[in-house]
Image (cartoon, rainbow, N blue to C red; front, side, top):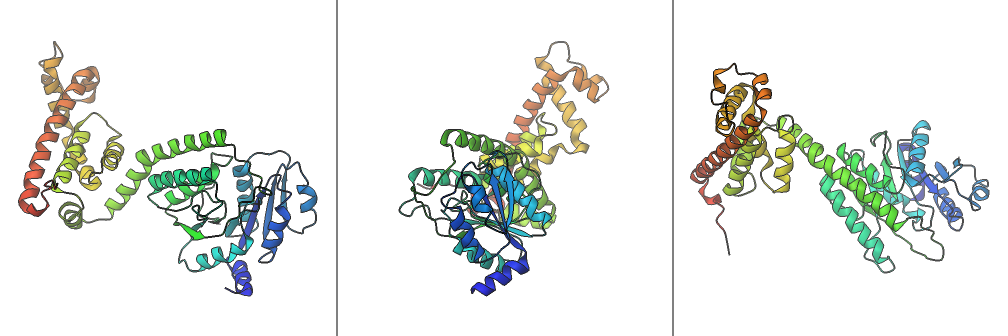
Length: 394
């Protein structure tokens, strides 16, 4: 794209550039001057700098947010996003002020945005394998890439670059992290909102003589690890089940049988194990958590999520009285003095008053029916689809 085309696109798409800065007096002027070649839509967030940053910024007619004390990059970006939306912008390109990002890569973000048919979050790919990139940075990026993939299913080559383009009206409105880990939180939670997250190629400069990094290896890595632990937990117990149930609702029964039973990935053995898992969870006393457990365990053990989910619905309301009765009956031999329990009215008070008996019986019932259904499913699938019998190859 030519310079006028980039400038026109920035204006038409209502794009601004956010520059968070903290004690980067050596490189700040160069970064601002480089951005000004493309646009005057600049918002600088001075995060409590104690060097000559204030004096540098006074020379420019741009929007500046001055903070009295340093509160972290995440907090600075949140303030910048808020100001950008208040100013009527739809997108924000964030660029670090430490000199590692080249302002002349702004057209890369603009052009890729124009090529998309929907809002997208773009992250600069710094090519961490090139010479001059610190090994600790490469490791940290690979670590971050793995967890981002686990939490979203999206594979990226660079998830830590601060050079990004954000769709301001598609990112979350509230956040829980104030420092470097914020940039992980925002891309994961934006991806959870079904917004595409993609890499675009950019250049990067690591100059030890100029670059001032405020990343604290132990403290910030610990904060990032805690955040990823929370995000993984949410992924397993909410995001994966939510997405699965939403997708399952869109399918007809005929399409489900064809695609998810007969033509789905996995051997007949895996499908049978998936059904067995679903039946076990459905009949076990995990009321309220059955869907979360069955989908999460299916993902963990690489089973067929759809089959496991459908099988777990063995505990649909019409079957609950029979499940309770069978559980209490099977548990009665293990609890003295309750052999005639089924002569009483069958209700939830009965379960509450004989909870241990119910729990023991329900696990016996779940284990037995899980084995029976798994074997039956395996025999049935081998009969209708024998070529997918899951024989081992050596």
